[in-house]
Image 1 (cartoon, rainbow, N blue to C red):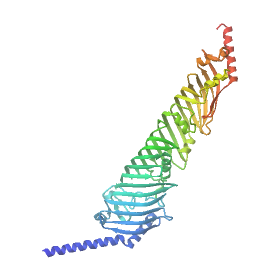
Image 2 (image 1 turned 60 degrees about the vertical axis):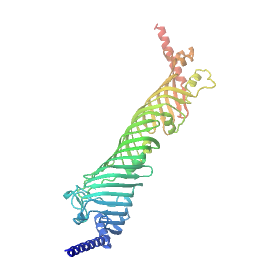
Image 3 (image 1 turned 180 degrees about the horizontal axis):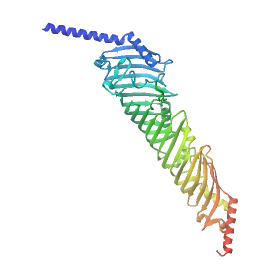
Length: 502
């Protein structure tokens, strides 16, 4: 009996050894490499070359490929591909509980081949797990599940943009679980996790965080890597667009050169449409809340809704190239639309309407009091203060062709109230506008009784004036002709009232 057991054990060992040798020969032989090249070439419609194929016995049966090149010229280069799966499932022509590792590879988009059409045998898109729900790959092998899909140092290039990615994920039927995904484009580095359904279209829900984000680059990458919608192989119906929704957080970010902090948004990408809503971050000592909706193409078109709270105007002016000109705290809101190749171009073409208020500030070199005193013919003090304080500025404005137009502008200060219209050119920072200066009772008293004809109401003098100069060197010039005309009109009116005893 013992001898029989020994013989049986030896026979089994021999069978296992022969099977192992057969498997290794099957996977590592040059014939297998050529067969894979022929099948892949026929399936993709593009030349496929494989430098080497090797067999793998332990820890699980599998195959390893090196130097895979697809396309003419080559658009897809896979340096190393390792696939292992359950042996019993593989003998039953199923890929089940598989492990796929792709490393040190380059993908240039768009790919030189179309994705397989949906439905029927041969579809490359995985369907439901198990039984008839699994998809069928080349050679009639069904794809049931992939326990691990790992990407290591994959370089993806599209429309002049490049990102490097690494990932760990798993696939069960048509459901992809992304446990770790990193993407680095140089200025933007993301860490992502989430889930995605691959049928009937790609629909992903992700959470992403980063130490830093370049919003300009993020939009450019979204444009570059948005796949073109292709018609199906039969029937001509367009393929459904990909949809991705991602909650995105970053410690710091930049947009059109502006540094912001605490960047938080939900990004929704649906085909060629993108939305960042809600969108919030801190900037210039205050906060921004709003949304961005746009369409991605060679030229982006966006609609921006903004609400600003308590921004440091001095920081804002310094960023705009006019340091040491104005101080105060800014709040406002507006809605704008724009179009451009990048965020800087988008901002340059913006147009829309809004309102803003600045409180508790100064406008340096405006010399409001000095201007009034000189107009009254009184000598200015030798050391006239070069800073004019104000309590509040309110404006309703429109923006078009890089010109802000304050259709209603008012400034309240201790010495005078200003009301009128003002324009500011963003290109050369030039100011232009007409205003009425309602002087305080204290400043009006300095005018003397000879200028009583300028009094408009009660004991306050009203002077028509023009705003000019630039943000760096603003100026107010009192319109003497208009002032005299108004004074004559006021004086005639006063005398007519006296004539009729009123």
